[in-house]
Image 1 (cartoon, rainbow, N blue to C red):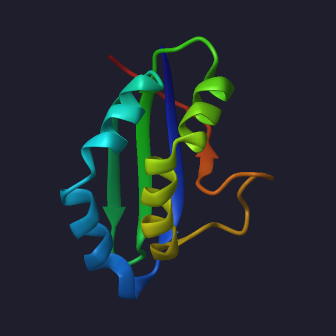
Image 2 (image 1 turned 90 degrees about the horizontal axis):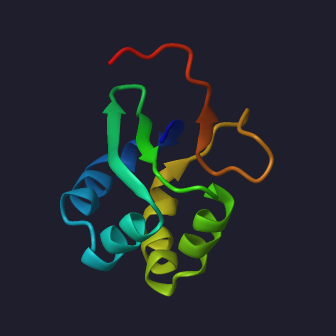
Image 3 (image 1 turned 45 degrees about the vertical axis):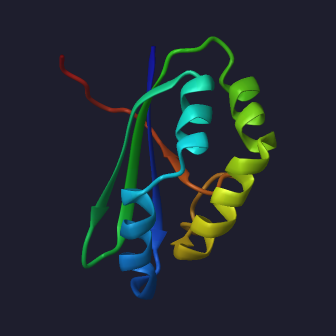
Length: 109
């Protein structure tokens, strides 16, 4: 299992919309997340800075393949079309990233 953390900005005028969307995530989106070996997925919001912190545990063996599977899913693409206009990617994110991936520097069970 691999723990993964990521961060992105949230447009101030989109905070309530983003919260509403994530209070009612589409069932097919949740099913695809599970089908791609992602578990224990959470998104946290820090206001007033409007930073989103995402965390999940990846239980597969090929994250790139699972990420491609998710990206190819038409329902997930529609979900992203709804969510992405709410977000503000960090200028320091890596090439090809929307959410900026983070380095795990500490963990304790």
